[in-house]
Amino acid sequence: MTNQTAGDAKKKRTRSPAYPFVNLEAALKRAKEFYDKEQRNAANLNVAVKHWNYVEKSSGGLQTAATLISFGLLKDEGTGAKRKLQVTQVALRILLDQRPDSAEKAALLKQVALTPKIHKQLWDRWGSAPPSEAEMRHTLLVDWEPPFNEKSVDGFIKEYKDTIAFAKLTESDRVSGAIGEEETPKGPGNAYLPKIGDYVQWEQSGLLQLPEPKKVRGLFPDGKFALVDGSNTGIPVEELIKEQAPAGTPVVPPTQEVRFQATPPGRQMQEDVFSLKEGRVVLQWPTPLSEESVQDLKDWLRIVERKLARAVPPKESGVE
Image (cartoon, rainbow, N blue to C red; front, side, top):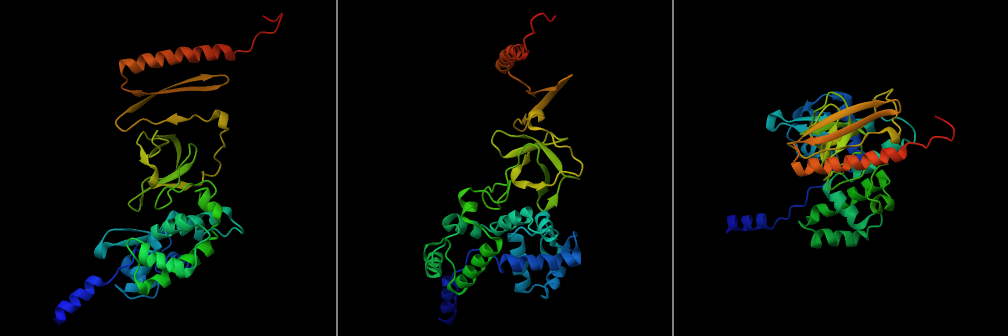
């Protein structure tokens, strides 16, 4: 009977959804402690928890690591004894930004505040005007799926409200659906939607794939993949991190920007460039093409030819 009773109690125990162990302000302090010791280097998990004054395999150390990962401040790779942690580019941009009233830092704080899945869900539900704590508690205990454990729900509510206040999220961040000045969240993780001309880094499984930031030169029609300079490989936009343009990079006026349209994987792009005194003319097309598509392209080029003819200014009277 005793074993059965213990088994029944275990079955009835409610496990809360994953949520941050500490609020964002405390998480940033932990990220800074890690950075002060390791800089941009990766460190074994057992070493990392000691930076936060925890012993190896302690629940507090593991929860702290999980929290910083959920906020997007740390990334991990490997498993078991080989698991390592490293600060992310987002964390570096926040921690190293000492500019007073930095708009970029303010935008990134909003972004990471809503990076934990449970935070994003609550923000989408209530925005900057959540109900009373009693009503929040009831929702999380009764209506949420999976429901929270009674012993942890109050701690989570405080963590969530402290994080929202620290990040200074406002109603406009919910209504517009935009977090940051130029970034747009897209589902859990708030991955931004790149634009042609942005400089980006590709982060996959916690590792940076590009030797240096590259410029986005094309987007797939479905918006899920992007092309960067020097490559015809489609990169998932959810794995892209926005970067600053290299120092000295000239700003290309919008009228001179060449907008590429990427093709689905498995296709190759051909390109022909013709230089005029007014500037470059660039033509791109995917290969192979069907006979029908070749004919459509020829018809389109005839239309372009007529437009070019109309673009030539009329000669002034008496001028040869």
